[in-house]
Length: 151
Image 1 (cartoon, rainbow, N blue to C red):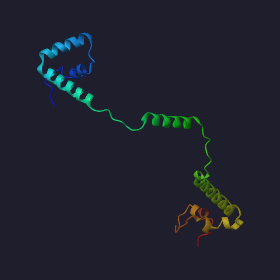
Image 2: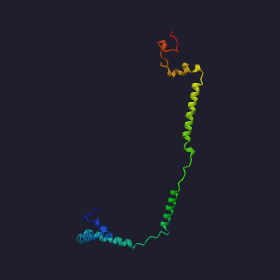
Image 3: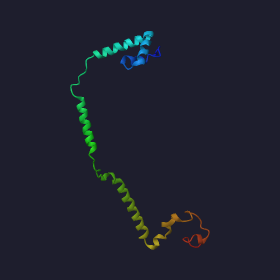
Image 4: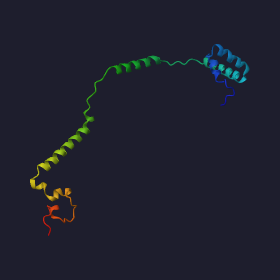
């Protein structure tokens, strides 16, 4: 909707009684000269009159009392500090993971330390750490102490 008069936005303030003093006198002079604003002011005044004639709605209960009661309950609940409750199930996954990690570490330690002395040096168990890849040819005897002398 286009507004043909630049002062049409002031009509609502005039009808609501928000203009005073010089602003009111100036706008009343404008209303006398501008037919668009005068017609708009007349329609808004008629609308305000129609709204005043409507019956006032009755709720049937006191809404303010209900709101006050709920607010008081919320404020009293907020004022009473609660001690944090211990909730062991929240740390259960971390505790189980820690126990599993510790158990795996103990088991590997027992396997390495508790194994017989010859078991640790066997090439089959320690082949992962060999400098020569599996299937590789050992050309120099000192580089291959586990293979023994070349034949």
